[in-house]
Image (cartoon, rainbow, N blue to C red; front, side, top):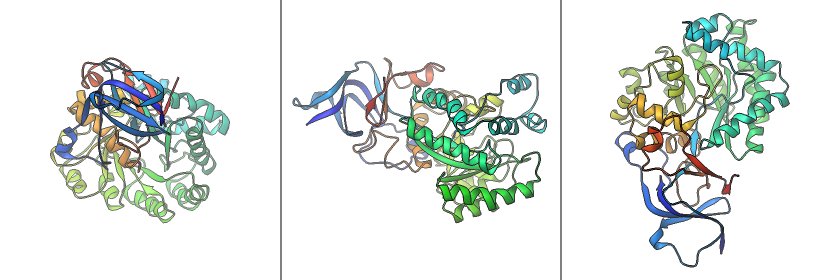
Amino acid sequence: MIHDLLITNIKGLVQVREQPVSKVAGKELSHLPILQEAYLIISHGLIHTYGLMKDIPSEVKAKTVLDVPGQFVFPSFVDSHTHLVFAATREEEFVMKLKGATYEQIAASGGGILNSAKRLQELTEEELFQSSIPRAWEIIHSGTGAVEIKSGYGLTTNDELKMLRVAQRIGRETPLTIKTTFLGAHAVPREKTKEQYLAEIIDEMIPAVAEEKLAEYIDVFCETGFFSVKDTERILVAGKAVGLIPRLHANQLNRSGGVQIGVKMGAISVDHLENMGDEEIEVLKGSDTMPVALPGAAFFLNLPFTPARSLIEAGLPIAIASDYNPGSAPSGNMPLMVSLACIKMRMTPEEAINATTINTAFTLGLSQTHGTITRGKVANVFITKPMSSIASLPYSFGCNPVSKIILNGKLLA
């Protein structure tokens, strides 16, 4: 048999798991299996096998052979929280922040999410796709192979659907694995009362999303000044009724009750968690809800970082995603998120890599196919530049460690 791709003399094959692992929690987060001096064989888009170089079969043949001494091979990152589809960046608000304006003040003045919505509503679906596709390739080249994309900058039925169609098209026209989330409840449009907009979300948007099969998940910005716990429950009940799985923006600006309602509603994840206390940690214990930290947003907004050590010491899992968006986290660079998790959240490199692969895959229902080097899984991997150890990845913050990218078993040019 001639295989598609053979990688030889790998310094470290990272995240090798003989059996698929759904998620890792507590002390297990510090365990990151690495096969030293290894080879990897890829066939038909899947990981065929791997092993030590000393044991490589003499008869193995491949169409393409990559010899990578001194380099590591990682499973591609899984970024489980982004707003990748948007119309324009918001540098003017960045300057306002530098001059002292708060997130809430910018939103109250008509900026923030409403600003992005106004710009997005002015674009056709094709224009929105052309605006967003470069960002998809940008994250691919920093090591991401699977990504969640939310709506939420449309704030009308037609524009929310437009965003989700564009997100799905990105999945067809790039090698990324895409999961989509309906986030109509991101902000209340200026021209409507909250009750009017809630009715539109529940009576129009959710049925339309379900009819076109545009999303697997439903999200709500459960936050003071946006959507209350009561609002959140109403929306999630309606979403679950048509098969949408809940995930939540929770506890970014305040202890909003988002964690509690997320667990109550069986959310697959609660994301942000910059404002956490013992009560929220206790609620998460015994649930299947994944706590997701978004260190890029905390860094950009000068917010407290998610208390990763408290979560881990409580025996909980944690995932790390980028929150790539134009207002509060204008970066989808997952190696940078690993660095921030280590530097600002006191996670070890092993914990941070588990949090950006296995645990993010769990929140997107990809545990059986992505996030680890396991036989039969999708061959989404990247080869690093020469590195002394895996700690080089977070240590060299701001640098792109990626040398070569393989998605769905194909080497990208």
